[in-house]
Amino acid sequence: MWSTKIRNIWDALYPVALYVVVSDCVYMLLTLAIGENTISPMALQILTALLSSPSIVYPYFSDRRGQPQEMREKKLFRLLLVCAAAVCLSVSLNNLILMTDLKEQSETYQKVNASFFSSTVWVELFGTSVVTPILEEMLYRGIVYNRLKRSGRMGMAIVISGLVFGLIHFNLVQFLYAGLIGIFLAVVYETEGTLLVPVLAHAAANAVAVARVETGFLQGFTEENQFFVPISLCLLAISIIITAYLTKGRLFEKQLKYN
View 1 (spheres, rainbow, N blue to C red):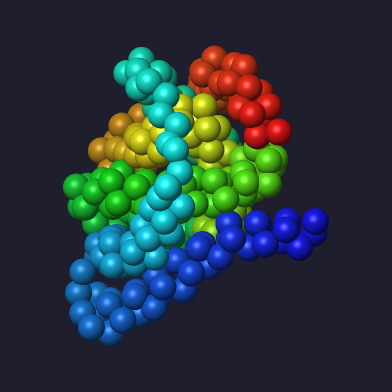
View 2: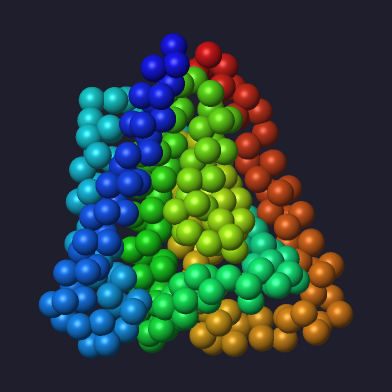
C-alpha cells in the first residue's frame, strides 16, 4: 500500500523536478550563448520557458492519450466568474502580504520581482499572461494534480498540488501567494472539467498584477488609503463567495465518483 502511495507521489512530482533541471540548463546555455545583459531578464525567462516546454508538453499529452476527457459545457458566465474570483483573490492576497514586512525581508522575492518587471509592458504581458499560465497549468494542474488524484483523495491532491506550486517559487512570499492561488486553480480545474479555465484565470490574475505595477492601475489603492484593509478583505470575501457558488456540490459529487 505504501509503495503504491510513494509511487503515485513520485509520478506526480518528478515532472516538476525534470522541468526545473531542464529549465536551469537551458537558462545557463542561453546566458552563455547570448549574454545575460543582452536582453531583459523577462525576455530571457520567456525564451527559457519556450525551449523547456517539451518537458511539460510531452508528459501532459501522454497522460491524456487514450483517456476519456470530461468536458463540461463551456459557459461564458462561469468563465467570467472564475476570472473575477482569480483577480479578486490575487489583489487581496498581494494587499494582505503588503501589510506585513515579508517582502522586505525576502531578498529572493525582491530579485524575482525585479526580474518579473524588467522589460516592456507587452513583453511582460506575453510572458506572464500567455507563456507562463499555459505551461504552469499544464504542469501543476494537468500533470501534478491529475496524477495525485489517482490515489482517490481529491482534496489531498488539490492541497498538495497547490503547495508544490507555492514551494517551487523558492521564497516565503510567493509560497503563501502561489500556494493559495494554486489551490484555487486546482478547484476550478476540477469543477469546470477543462484546463482552459485555470489557464485563463491564471492569465487574468497575472495581467492585473502587471497592469497595476506598470500602468499605475489602482495607484491610489495603497496602505495609506483608509479603505485599504476593508476593501482587501471584501475582495477576498468576494473571491470565496464566487468560488463557493461555482463549486457547490460539485467537488463532493466528484469525490464520490473517485471513491
